[in-house]
Image 1 (cartoon, rainbow, N blue to C red):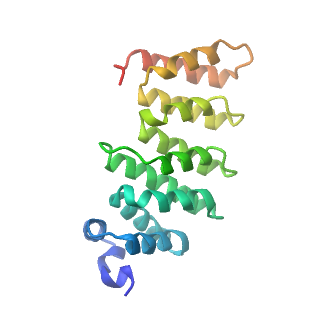
Image 2: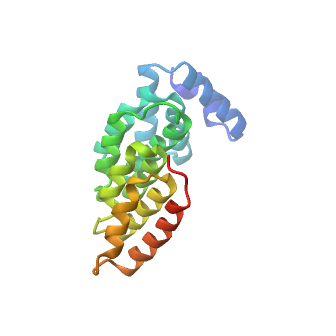
Length: 199
């Protein structure tokens, strides 16, 4: 029996019924359930259903991280890799009081160099949600040749509010060859960082 046969509301148009099914699946999820959800994320032609499966994995928590990380690293389709990065972001938010697994951090770090710009930006968003454990990864990304990625990483650091980012941003701001857009982003980030209590 497939997941959508076992939980018919998983594909329901009513978001409340769909969320109820997602939570029921997440509460009893085992390795087979995670594999079934990953299969939906990676093979379903229904984008809404893929998204529901990814959101369900985000409700499962740490046991789902290795499978999402593996697909983020290895799946040939950018849309699937983006969905996995977004699921890791949602998982970090849902379980913010728990340590984020190294497998997830490592996969997100690799995704910062993904050939697809959408995947790279999704990885930055996920690292921003992870918070303090991701600061050094984001600091490394601010010197990327991809200006959009650099600006996103700068914004992520400002949103995390970690003191370690300040020195790196000041150094980059002071370099004469720093792109004007990057310098402007840094100025805004530093303003936010200096007005944020350190975490």
